[in-house]
Amino acid sequence: MSNTLQVALIQPILVWEHPEQNRLNFTKHIENLPHKVDLVVLPEMFTTGFTMNAREVAETMDGETVKWMVALAKKQKLAITGSVVIKENDNFYNRLLFVYPDGTFKIYDKRHTFTLAGEDKVYTAGSKKLILDYKGWKLCPLVCYDLRFPVWARNVEDYDVLIYVANWPKARMAAWDALLQARAIENMCYCIGVNRVGLDGNNHEYSGHSAAYDVLGNRIDTLPKSKEAVEIVELNKAEIETYRSKLNFLSDRDSFSLE
Image (tube, rainbow, N blue to C red; front, side, top):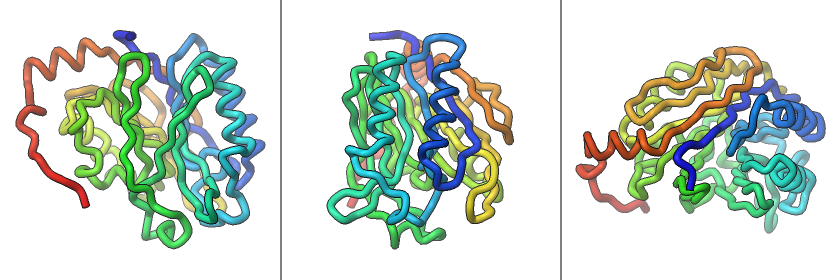
């Protein structure tokens, strides 16, 4: 168990539908981190950008990107997470992978597909929330549009860190900023959001705003808003325990069931 967790947030410019080049770019970022980290967080669809051309870009779980994540996690002795386009059993998924330093991994399929872009017509939605154990920390990774659905993210598992990987457009950044902070406050956890920058193949603009918030909703990173950047933040387990014990808001949370 580790009382602190070093997390690298990588806010990139993505090359549209070019997995090989994006993997190369991320390899450079990860291999050039200034010091050892425990976890690297990449954006949503980090090899392609947010594309509906699933049939053209999808990989399998035996494909190059999964192999790359496993090899890099082992080599750098860290965990890596982000989502990719995966084909499985004739369905396409916007699938988040969390790869451990030993090369094993767990998956989460995005539950809330983005209907405004027609994602629901291309990708099969997931149905299971994923809570991970890593170095004595409980993590809950989610994907982009999931951010707008607080019931799905509600901290009924006493997790420590909520992670959102995203391709969230510039036009709605006020919502991104407000909701990330709100999720940290209402769930009494660290909340991390990693977004991309630049233009995609549909000429949609992304302005980053990747961020990390503490249990009280205070921002703990200094990432620039609209350019490619990398920052390492340190999360402290004792801080979570102190504030949850002192304030104890989670003990008053409502009981509910999801359908």
